[in-house]
Image (cartoon, rainbow, N blue to C red):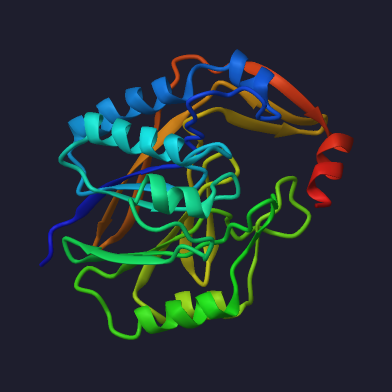
Length: 274
């Protein structure tokens, strides 16, 4: 019998050296420092000794190569023994990520990755379209995914991308993707899907498998009948995959959550038309 494997799941870290001219300057000024939030969470994560750290997108906030280098430095300083697996979000920049974080030649192509850690296969798709809030997963990415899961991994697989699959009409739109994705998930050894983007943790089923959406480590979202509220709530999750299934524990990272900004329903609807 294989022992359970535990990993940490964080998302939407929005790291950047300077938050001037971001379009969200007031929000970042009112909320605690995203870098400090990340360091606080990583201290707790290091104590839990997970097999790896998963970051599901919006690693930085529309920054440059130097911002990805800063993120890499923080991870190296706080969790030097824990490998990190990343996928990209709508606020990421693909070329800068490859150059500043991966230390590779810059490219604007979708970032797809697969790695096996302690027998668990971690598959990352790229739902981000630069310059767009909404996400898309192309048929070519689904072709690639289908090839990756043709043979089962020793501990199964987890699938990761930034924009979650959501019901139509939601306040925050999900990813545009063919129903074929659900079929691949249903028929493969994928145990669960992990996403970010909404800045709110949630659980749903996709292809009969759990889809786990993480809170942000930069700031939280609270949605009600009046609009979207930016809060100081931040959390991280510890996930255990075993022969019995998948368990996710959400851990608060901010002692007291408070609202720092609001967007009306009308403003939000106008933003989402893009």
